[in-house]
Amino acid sequence: MNIETLRWRGDMLEMIDQRILPARFEYLSYSSAAEVAEGIHSMVVRGAPAIGCAAAYGVALEALRLNAESPAAFREELNVGIAVLAASRPTAVNLFWALERMRRVWAGMEGAVPKAIAERLLQEAHEIKSEDIRINRAMGSHGAALLKDGARVLTHCNAGALATAGWGTALGVMRSAVEAGKKVSVIADETRPFLQGARLTAWEMVQENIPVTLITDNMSGYLMSKGEVDAVVVGTDRVAANGDVANKIGTYMVAVLARRHGIPFYVACPLSTIDRSIESGSQIPIEERASEEVTGFRDCQWAAPGVSIRNPAFDVTPAELVTGLITEKGVILSPNSEKIAELFSS
Ligand code: MRU
Image 1 (cartoon, helix red, strand yellow):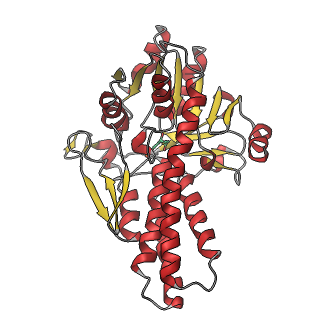
Image 2: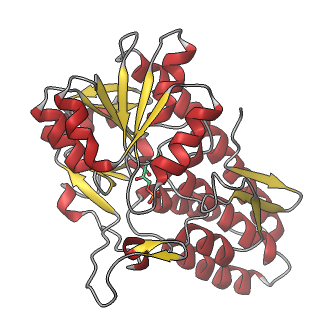
Image 3: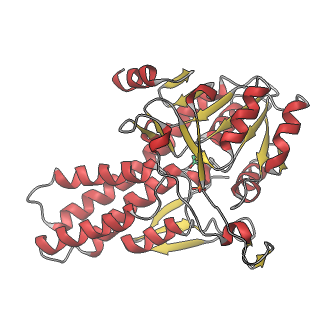
């Protein structure tokens, strides 16, 4: 099944509503930057590369919406739209990477009329989307080579087709391994509190007939201690220049357990997710989300009323716990600042 997380239809962006999967499979339509920003914030679309693609389309939609304005009004209002998109979620650096790329394209069109700029920005958004799939395919084949035939691979959150323009980063590695003829099976952490593992990873793997077993987040240590996990592969929202990795809350716990049990811990990471402007993971902004995500799910609230809540949506795994970063340019084992700098200069 070819999952199209985002698609362009007529003059609108459509995105799968990931909040209601797997109960219902529906697309929602978007026609402005503010609407797309709300779609990102409310997690209709989520996952770092998918957020980047959505933001790029958000800029293009806004430019199209404003293209009958005077050049001065167009410039002013498009900048507001970009700022609204930038404020939608703080951790995934792909959001800022995509906005910067769109800005550079715009800056290169000095003197062009708004209509021409809007058309060019739409073309760039299409390019970001198709490039993402190509990059995921490349990461997939580098990562698949790391998995032995029969590997039981644990993953956390959803770093699949739904988190990208298609194929996926961590789940792209599993897909590529299966495509290469390896029998791999996936162990999906449920991923409290938003349940991306139970709802999205499990759904994607079931659609593809890739064997998948769902566990709650507190079961991974037990399975590792029983020798039932051969490797961990996760995605990431931002990697610092020294190789520290921000990913869905709970990833750090999995990395510590993997090290304790001598299990390789791999991070599938497109270059657009590496933020070389920050030295270490301590500088990565961690999103805190609404307390209702922790006190219950949808209409069912189970926590004691009045209790205080923390809901950091991401954590940081220090580079020393990362066996390898799987990038589109190849695998960097034991990542550090020097190896990451070299990756960008090669
Ligand atoms: O809060 P989410 O669902 O956007 O978090 C997503 C993750 O943490 C993913 O693992 C990460 O973005 C990598 S997606 C290829």
